[in-house]
Image 1 (tube, rainbow, N blue to C red):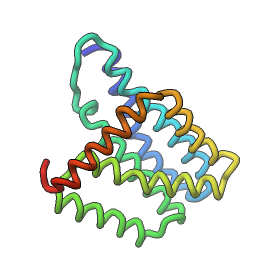
Image 2 (tube, rainbow, N blue to C red; image 1 turned 90 degrees about the horizontal axis):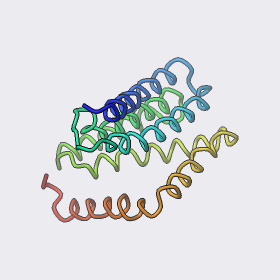
Image 3 (tube, one colour; image 1 turned 60 degrees about the vertical axis):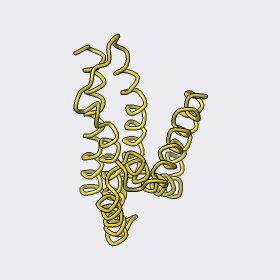
Length: 180
């Protein structure tokens, strides 16, 4: 395996650890750890934006288990963030449980699809950004700034690949929700 692919896999594994770190922060420090949560999410998003390009640096494609499960790592981090928000008191355990139960029912009923994995994360990130902006605006502003900067730095690839790809997958899902 190429060195770049090993490094990319290490970055992805590190992102998985961030999900656990978020849970630990919520458990041990609660709401006071919001600034650390913001920093961890910025670190995760940055790592997520570089692990794929790193993996593709080699001359030949090389698949690894963690590389093929990047989306699942994304979901793991978002669930770690939901646990952080719940343990910190910003999201009630009932709301978090209902959210997870609804997604479990959707996936059990329709099967797991990439587009569903992407949709699971979005509300969690939106709530986190809103809370960070409301509670700690001096650091919370870094989250939307990072998103805008990432879109700008990857333009025009972002709308061409990410947005159109998501919309294409969503259309296919809506037309045939039970297809793999």
